[in-house]
Amino acid sequence: MSIQYFLELAGTGFFALSGATVANQKSKPDWFGVTFIGFITSIGGGSIRDMLLGAYPLSWVADVNRIYVIIVAIVLTSVFYNQFSKLRKTFFLFDSLGIALFTILGTEKALLYHVTPLVAAIMGMFSAIMGGVMRDVLTNEVPVIFRKEIYATACLIGAAIYLLLLQLDINRNVSLIASSLVILIIRIIAVRYKLSLPQFKREK
Amino acid sequence: MSIQYFLELAGTGFFALSGATVANQKSKPDWFGVTFIGFITSIGGGSIRDMLLGAYPLSWVADVNRIYVIIVAIVLTSVFYNQFSKLRKTFFLFDSLGIALFTILGTEKALLYHVTPLVAAIMGMFSAIMGGVMRDVLTNEVPVIFRKEIYATACLIGAAIYLLLLQLDINRNVSLIASSLVILIIRIIAVRYKLSLPQFKREK
Amino acid sequence: MSIQYFLELAGTGFFALSGATVANQKSKPDWFGVTFIGFITSIGGGSIRDMLLGAYPLSWVADVNRIYVIIVAIVLTSVFYNQFSKLRKTFFLFDSLGIALFTILGTEKALLYHVTPLVAAIMGMFSAIMGGVMRDVLTNEVPVIFRKEIYATACLIGAAIYLLLLQLDINRNVSLIASSLVILIIRIIAVRYKLSLPQFKREK
Image 1: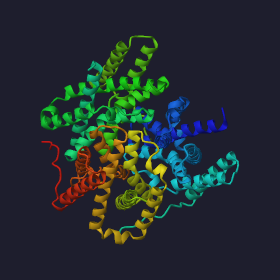
Image 2: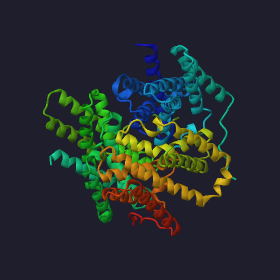
Image 3: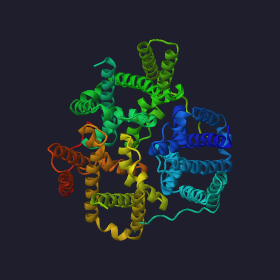
Image 4: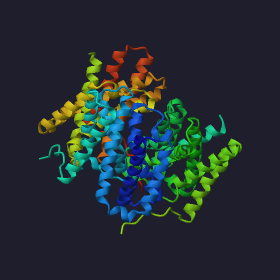
């Protein structure tokens, strides 16, 4: 098992865990509801990317390990629910690692379909954020990415840096790590100093 | 016309009828809105399944009869609206028959795309429930499947039994009928005795 | 650049502008949120149509100009926000032109995939309205098309007329212009005289 594949599985599990936790806080669904929303949060972004690209079969359809990981993550969420809710900082770190990794791997996958760099960056960002958007729509909330500290924008910047480094013929693994770190660091700074993007325009 | 095709059309019509009825109760849309939501409720689950599998053309795109059936169902809903609302038990039976049939046929269709049994069962469940999930999202409700008496879980169990029977080389029609009956019976028992899945985890 | 392509880009930009404006009025998202919703409003309808047809690559994936136009439109929305909000009549006209054009071009694209006329008309309507439906779902509103003055219905009528004219071997450009005008005129009359479709059925 390559390190990349291990990281992808870890990200998949963590997204399921965070999706299940948020779903449970918001609308108190039953076991099925929490599992369903955890599942969608985890595989939603990659599925949207693949359906937009026509990249069949989808990752979770072709690789059943991802589904096992999601199931295990949701069982763990249930067992350790109270312990997990005390680990806010650890969670934030894992979440940020997850979006960083999903963004760059998503950008990379899009490039296989010969899209322009701008489209590849958008596909990378979609991979990272669309699961959370679907989670919020299903729990009847306005998606948090529309308000939260610089989140999707960090993904776009990281994807842009990855594409730039590739263009400069930098080694792929170096590019992947460097651009993921950029996303991670932007997230940490944004949350630490409560930086948000400006509001679009106030009504008068 | 085979019995299976007849049942599929009947399920399509019934899903449109129930989607239109629920939409009308919730948010009082106009004629177009009710028709639109009835249409999405009816073809939504199968469309999601096919788009996830890359199974083109989608059933309703290839077979215009399904659209005619939906239109007829919605006109009937309008004409007999008050009579229909008294038939709650009959409705429940049709709804349960519909989800049972859609689950097993959806599972079967997924197998044509060489997916693993777990993915096939998920695709079967998606066929049965995703139309209703979209209906609830469009009418700005938290999807009922997250709270209702054992619903999607019944689909997963039925799909699992179907796959098991196939594995045991049981005749396909026998497997289809037996596993559909399992879904139907679980639903009837769950509603009769108000059985729900446990809540995931209460916040303290 | 053909006139049709120019009109498509103009429609894309205008849909982004109107999506960004509505998003900003509704839920006060940040810059990213407004841009994201403007983007989805603009390319959502065509993407749904293409994903339902299996028409890969999607237009905006293949043609990066559409994304540039959306970005420019959103920057303009920000700069001229207050001026724009006074131009309600002009906006209404552009919006109606946009849906008319998207409907007919969407219908035309569907025909390339050998669908029946009824499916082609539905795909045309989806091209025009689904971006707005997604915008409303993302801002946690019941879609306006379910209540607004004859809107999606106008698209269906225009698409039907376009298909009829094609059937009669009328020149394609003439058909396109005539059927777009029908949509435009229905919209203008509906809004001018506050015509709505009847409610489906009142609960007693």
